[in-house]
Image 1 (cartoon, rainbow over the protein chains, first blue to last red):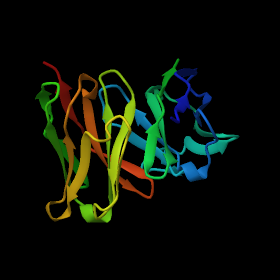
Image 2 (image 1 turned 135 degrees about the vertical axis):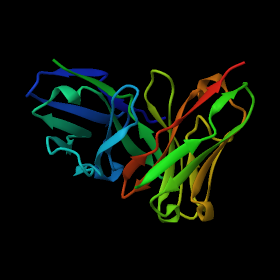
Image 3 (image 1 turned 60 degrees about the vertical axis):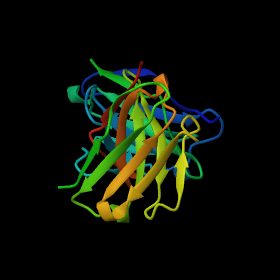
Image 4 (image 1 turned 90 degrees about the horizontal axis):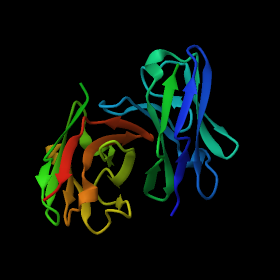
Length: 110
Length: 116
């Protein structure tokens, strides 16, 4: 069974840059995995930030960007702000018709 | 305004059944693939199932295959999730999500609790 991997936690200083990654337990992530990035603050509804590798959803600030780095998908936050402190999930197409979320990264801004 | 509203959650005993509904407004449901995603208390998001625009193509996560069935009634602009043989580990908030060009648009979720 393919598992989607993410860093459990990360911290960044206000104004700093952080890159979160999303990989596969076996194989590589590519644009054909159609990676998306989802932000969720505890108690809130999920919000899509990035889809199809690098397309920002409507209303998402341009300090959020998506890419493929090596064999992983990546979410980069440039100029982190206090309200970026959230859980971040990636989701991938892992085989035809089947999708899988990563376990999420808890981002702390301090 | 584009909106997804889930309903049908509640408390059910292990082995029981429940049907969740997701009512769409502000857009035509038949134009979109739809997904269900769940989140156990204090845990991460987990993909559950998805359905094509006309309902002819469905898929489910291994953890729910054979127990859960996704369906839709486009005339009623409503998505469903029939959940049978429920287990304690199915306890979660269930979100429906519109899926267009690989972008998720989320409902607000409905809580399902499986407990005796």
